[in-house]
Length: 161
Image (cartoon, rainbow, N blue to C red):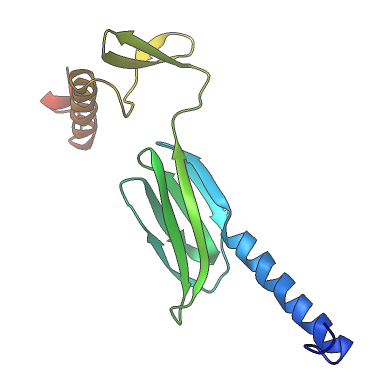
């Protein structure tokens, strides 16, 4: 063993270097979890200039001033996220895991193979949730779009239903 490392100082330097590499690797291997349709705030180093999301159908990320990152779950699954500094060097390489809703007010109703989701707090209302039956999902999405369009037009006919 001493033949490869003639001086104990070299052995200590190599071991210290390996510990630093191991700690950096474990920090970058962390998985960040966020629920679908929810946002999570993260603090990144101030020198981060670019965020790259592997699959934007699963997650979205917006970099704000001061190194604040807003991470939003878009669809179920996992993807990677890279943070690059101004020189293009990767300062963060991590996995983003987007999971289903975890609210205690979520009620899922199955009608054969058809699925409908409701938020029940305290009364049950239809909820737009990925994985619901196509007709149910489309109906709620259409109603939500009409409502948003009505609000944007100052309450015209689309919003007065």
